[in-house]
Length: 458
Image (cartoon, rainbow, N blue to C red; front, side):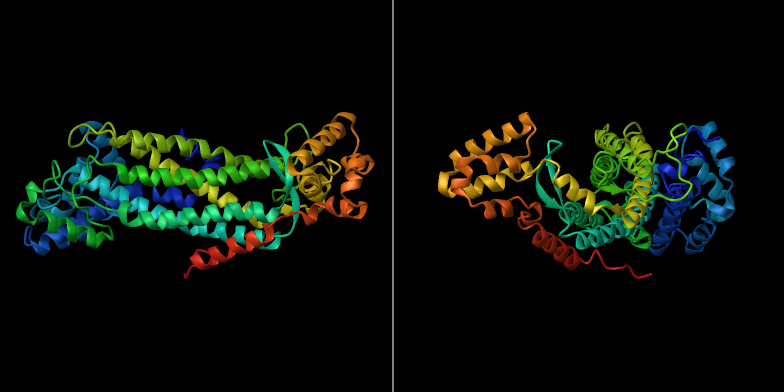
């Protein structure tokens, strides 16, 4: 009976995807351990360390469908060792003549660490694929709304006009950097290990480094310069990358959540007929998807910390630090898969409301353009004096609840410095966007040049 949201039938699709759950399933984990054992046997046979016929039998029998996982699990409980029952099961499948040659010279951590890296590499392909899809949706929105004016906010308050495309381009540029980081990490992270008891290759004799190299070559992993049983930086690096990617998605979810507030109403997540927002308030159209996206960032971030804790290892290896990765890496990959899937769907169907954005831009009666007015007055008055004058008029507008435009038009100092026609022009927020549209173009060009926006070949 499931006791974790990842596996609960009524909740699991809010916290993960079937595809990513399969990567971290019992069956796939066991198969990856068997894949490592098969690759090791074939590598050793190539170096004449074990009989070639036995290696062929081991590789042929190293298949999860030939094993009874429930029986192996019961045996783990009995012998208190996570791998020995698997080795016994494989030995029995191979028969007395060939089964003696399984796991020749390896230690448990060689198999489990290398198997974990095979799972992580599988998860990585899904993460990269889906993050690229998110990047393409962000690029589409940035391009479409490069000139859509909206209020830029700092400290939760309206500051200056910006464009919705500019806001999205910030997320796009961040996403492209994450994709670059994922690519750059591949050579470091996806590395196996086959070092023996304390990582010195002693059990393999002089062939140790070559056994490791040939094993990893068969598995599609890098061979390390030295055993990393006690060096958990690879896991920590990848967990950190997952945390950063999740942080970007969580930030986006939280931002759109706020822009969807009734009082702002500038965007809305996709709504489908029959979707219910409340069990008691029938009118509610809640930002459920956005809340879901934002909520998953915290556990992923805390898992990154857990994996970093695993970098403290006793002597050449221990099981105390190691097991933290078994908890954190699968969880983080599964949670991130849910975030990515939900983000793709939200971006693809996002309802953008330019008229509401413009309404909010004009809500302060021109106060949003105080900076622009100040700079227009800077030449005739001096910048510091202009700041003092405009500040005085801004405070009067707020405290007396008089539109800023009216305050400006009534002030003699302003009329003497700036013509009424020019003042009217200055009060149009859609003409005070700085280089926002051009910056969006620059981000889009860089994203295109990176290659990440291209559709992957099947």
